[in-house]
Image 1 (cartoon, rainbow, N blue to C red):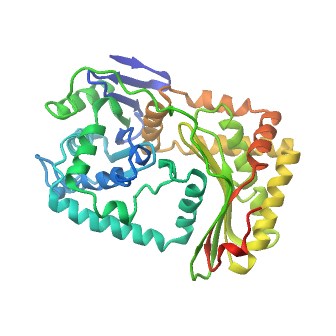
Image 2 (cartoon, rainbow, N blue to C red):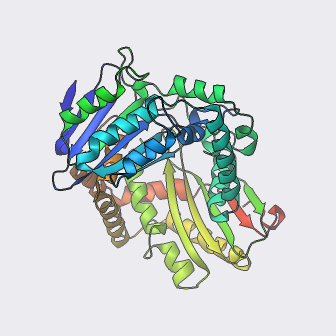
Image 3 (cartoon, helix red, strand yellow):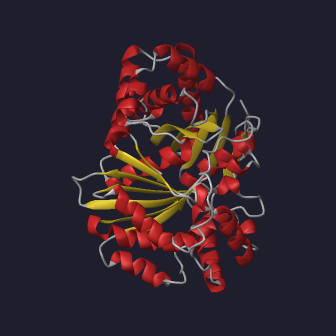
Length: 428
């Protein structure tokens, strides 16, 4: 069944429940293709932590049709590129090629996702690569602090775990366990194939059907999986401080707490608030901490949103001796905004930042492809660019003030990486 949505976007649901969504952009000579699977690290048990990321590595290692070298060489031979990434709620395998090479990209990606062999030797090779990746991540305190903060908020809930897993979970994971996860989870109803560029929707549908014919994804009739909503509200840990001692020249801190889920209608107001508070060089935090006082090279706020949960944080990287002053200034600014809200001028600027970032982020086929897939996989709905801009423009000062009072006035957790111990930073 094929349906034309707004902005020239077309959607077809195959009998198996697999969805194909495309956007034709005749003005470009490229095409971007993504195979999106609605399975991520939050779908793993603690014993299988990191399985989604492990599998992401393995699916490019060879199929019954192609070796690992052939998978990469066929795309690179036409000047294209392939890659993949894993998140907490989905995994994506993608390629960007010239428009005339889209049939090749469809065949290669569909083959890799549907028919990977998972050779035992490849499992061992990639196990070593992933363990190195985990070790390297621990050597990047600016990245590590965000993982520590996320765990401080969600605890042992799957949302609080590392996407990569840990040495303790990756080391004993067997090929049979990974293959079982692959075959149970990578089913047609969980998959969205998105493409954007100089293409024809009907042609893409034919290419996908041909590539998947006879594979595990050419399965019995089924309905597409509904967007993830969560069975109940995700539990959060009580606010607390976590300090990871590192003998480093710079300290990395994240202060924050519980946010909102991605389906919350207040997400547009939060986007405006986030931009004014810490979203750019004109933001309050950047001006107060870096521009006026030169206390930190990097300072910003951010919001992460999931189906049924979210978090909000402020990050700063500074000299260890300046941490307490940076934290005091951050807390004071959060309290000020929570109590007094934003000015009309700030709200107008925040709206402009949200709209500009969104529209300018759709300048290439890859970002358009991602937007298609996320709309289908995460929301089950299509919001046009114009509709989105209208939603942002409709945000009121009262809505921004209300979300600020809720998010910024709550007791907060603190995550730190640097030459400290927890006794130096008692919970406030």
